Image 1 (cartoon, helix red, strand yellow):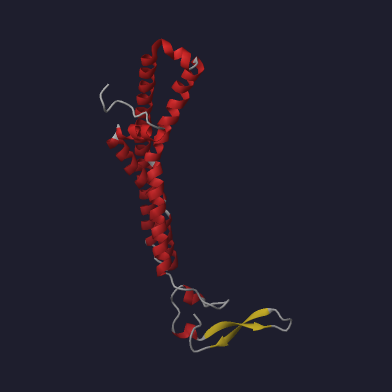
Image 2 (tube, rainbow, N blue to C red):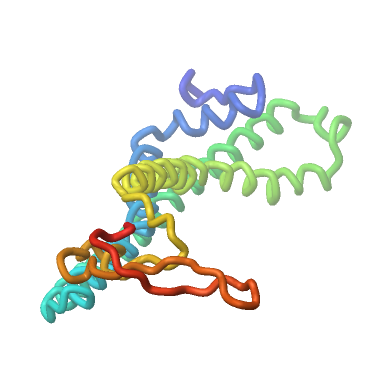
Length: 215
């Protein structure tokens, strides 16, 4: 066994890092595919909103078709990325499982006749069946784990940028519907709603003339 194949037994974290360092290209491919896959999972609401804004609100009949095609392409790409990510991460987990099983067998051979005096047969079976699988599945964090963190950061940055560009809403309880859509001008500013008190003391909406919109 070479120095690179010698497991790092100084702690669980170091051993997991040894499993990662033993297959750097495969882990990097899994992290890349996992990141792009998670980002594509967060992407479909954007073309859906553009289809509504550009097509239904503005009355453009071709815009929903184009954005629907973009949404379908995004789903197809995401399906391919999911398959590639799963295949890559399966190889990562199998590589880690085989390396762990090999390390356990070599350590058992090194102990020789002293093995039954240190551990029981049930513990050896548990290590071979349960612990090896648990250590292998722990490397899933290198793929979808990294991708989920980066996807959360990307969505947070996108939402913050949208919130900074958005305008403050109207202060009145009843605001002009044309102002909310950004089309308030001219004749639409002739009237605006205000709050007036009714006879029973309950607030009611009444329309009053104004030269400018309250929004």
